[in-house]
Image (cartoon, rainbow over the protein chains, first blue to last red):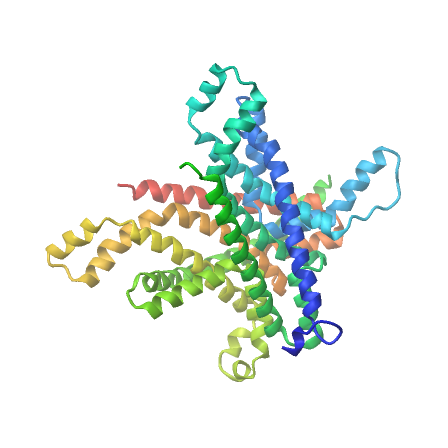
Length: 230
Length: 223
């Protein structure tokens, strides 16, 4: 227990902040994932073959390639890509992006591929009559989406999105290879300096279990809220 | 685009793919037995066995695979008792540590897949077997297991693909699998996109192969 003391003598506060970092990266990545899903779900549902192909390419490649490889691509290629874009605007200095942004983006793209599949499935399982009825009532396209399709879609999507959240949360442990100090990285540092890896990695496992457990509780409440009337 | 690097790195990456495939097949092999064992425990009426199996699958599905590998590779070496025992012959090798972690991890997911498959078997099949006077052991091996395997094929196919991606974590414990070699080439040449395309294509090819193989099995054993 001494090892977990707060302050200078133990690793309690470091691990606490690392846990907050894991939560921050997970939420950012999940939101970036939603952004990607927002772009790619319509592409996958589109009638145009080419758009369809782009959507399918994204989800197939990301879901078929290991997360770690994607993270390495962003870690080693991220600043290169940004510098390339900057050079087109006449900026030639070295640009370094911080590990938080690279990590959230890499995990976000992965999470987005799973979210896209969830949203596609949810939209496709909404009764066609709903679309037709709102059209007949003369409801505008964007109001139809926000007021009729989205609420029904969310109800169907939440259980699967909770799986995506779990995957995203666990995937953030891989960002530790880029040096971002989240739970895994902090445990690695603590294990190295105290020579007690068993304790710290087990403690990291407990922290992850706690996070998954608490988020499940929260999501269950959301699920109840969105399935009112069913 | 550095085409030359892509062509040159291809044979090296292909060599590393052998390591990935070895890791995958061994972990799946052991994982299947672990999964079957825990699935049976989950369905038993013995409360202790039942709770234990539930706890096992909850623990391994609720924590990242990376933590599990690190606990086994870095953590277990710390215990005096293990270092003095015969287990150390296995546990000092990163290769076997990775396989143990992967097998335990996929075992937890497999047990859930098999459990739900067993539960969807119609009671009538078992009752029919019983009324024919077949012993419950043979009912289990000859009726329940074949049906459960067929039922769980689609979900198990996904699990194989997840495990294929999971083997990339072996590179974090110094193993040179496909991802490990890809990272090495990236960090020496600083050409991440080219290497990603080659290594990613190899992974995608394997994913497609597994996907189609499972589809083929599903068709073959459909009823």
